[in-house]
Length: 411
Image (tube, rainbow, N blue to C red; front, side, top):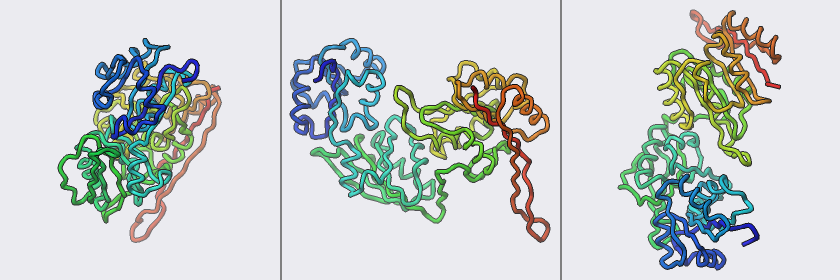
């Protein structure tokens, strides 16, 4: 260890102590505190160290670890601790100068090697501790997915999700206990998946193959309107693409979607946010604020279907419902624009350099935006969209309601 380093995170595979490097094995032998789940603790049959599991929960165990600062602490983790592992969590709690991480081959590396897939050309996803619907963001024709499962039921649930999306021909491979003596491989197709539950420790490899009824969702903004369940309160595709662009999604930021309707803007914003987390920061968050209970239910369904089930939903009327929410980097006002004090409350809540975007379709809304721009600066843009539709026996362009968009950056 280097001076100041007291916390070591050791990746351990299914082959246990035998697979550890000499450096990692030495650290485990010298540990004064050995932290890990029961499965990992069982791999270390003999130790002079005090043992600590995660039974008390992540936060309580982290506090207990902090109490050992300056002594020799080793945390056992699966494979590569920095890829959907406890190492990343520890790294947000303790300084890099205090930690040393020794990874071993993780599930993604082992599964990619078994499949003959270059890791740089696959999408790595975890549904361990995350909703299964997270997969929906990644299912598209030809995509190759590596998926960390939640438990033994995950393969069947993933196959059902693929069938529901029209991707029944997708090839599904299950790897149990990768890298260990009990390693096992199961191959099948989502449409015909009848396998019993797998071992809880399993990883999926999926080749996404569309069926005749597949509906692919592109990664860019401006998804088709009919991909959203709505009651008419929906920012239309063309305007939505420009709105999300104006909100400028960035890693680690917080978005408020006020008067969210079907949640389409918040959903597309989340789909575009890069998955990286800024140094010392947190993952990006989007919060949809909507007063109608039926619309809140539709927002939740739309978010799950489109692969961003992490979207947070607050039922209530703004500006009152904004009280206590995380400070936003961007705010979109799509509904309730003329409510007294709403724009001002959103503007006050924004961080410095934050962005406020608001769309108006009524003269009253336009009046509010014009007055607000006069007080706070910003840009107004008039958006006109016409779609070709049947007109009698012919086809003509039928205009949608004109939209005036305000974009302001807080000084």
